[in-house]
Length: 507
Image (tube, rainbow, N blue to C red; front, side):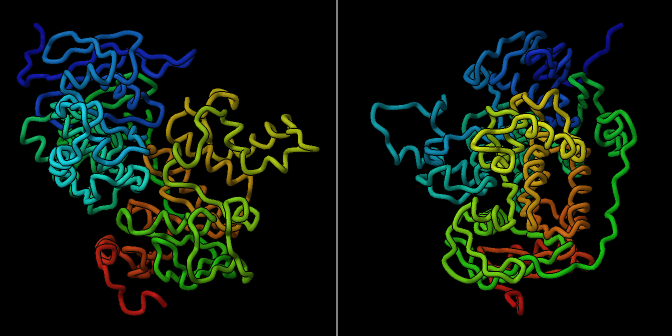
């Protein structure tokens, strides 16, 4: 006898296959979603999670398999088809229009906002404001999306999905750029949606989140479905074994030598966002930066790397005055920046792995204006092995790699340049637990080599694990300084929500 289903399934995907050239992203994967449940889709980078989500959202077409909604076979050939079926998605790599306003991003192509011949900004305001308020985004409707931080853009994308009255919402790493307060707001929002009967597919690498908000978890590995578990009766260890096919030991932090000379010193550093920020980071030290979305974390990196104009204060590198007027000047001075958004700010997605990795050292690899291609390829080999970079060939477009391997390509760029000061802005955002361990190991190795590392992270346990000291930013000011061995998540979050600097915080 067949199994008797006691819970209705609102969506079923069976035998889904997808390949890109000779590489299979999905090989007969299957997945089902119950009405009103939050269902995690898990796996290492490259397992096929995001590909399956894109197929269900209509932005990619499967090569084989069947999708059913309410038991009926459907063809989802476009995002508009998905919207008509009540399916919405929040992508990890956001699909907003940067030159359009927040309001325009919500209403464009929205079947629930009938367009007129004349743009009525009051109607856009009235339509959008409740959804922005629901996700806790306080920006003006007329704010260009390009002016928002990556975390704010993520909230805008969630507001857009809600405005489309989706009954199935796919969330691909929705908290990857959100600090704890914004993540808590999202969790409350998910609980409210569940109570209204909305079903959510939750793609994430954060185990704590999965076991907190999800009812079930389906694990993919190498494009195939490994199994589905009830989170209440499962464990983190069991899910990790399913994801990687083996036991994965979480690496303890390596012991570090005492920090050396001051590598970078900022005194009363000010920009359009930062207000009299003073700090120093020494050789062999990892300085953690915490703060809410919009606190100035990324803007600090932009100032140090010559992207944002410095309006006041001074910088010194190894005791010498440093005034970065451009990224080129910053790199010449021995400063590197791994940006928050690898696709928009770091990688050239149509260029190859090799071209992206060697972008910062082309003068070194050129002679008389001509690139020595053999030397270029040879230079990447040792770095790729050090990073455990997994790609079919270095001439492949970087867009074909998983998120974790794309991040490793960016890291390869800076390993080749070999800067003395490296600013890492959320380097593990949206990558799996195995790739995270690779990056933690690399941070420890770079510090042991005497590099000065500035590490921004939206994950407080990550900061406490990797950093020696932690600075907390709020509204462009430092509100607290902690020795990482003495800090707690509660202390950091309290300082991150305190607008007035703590006594002595700016010393």
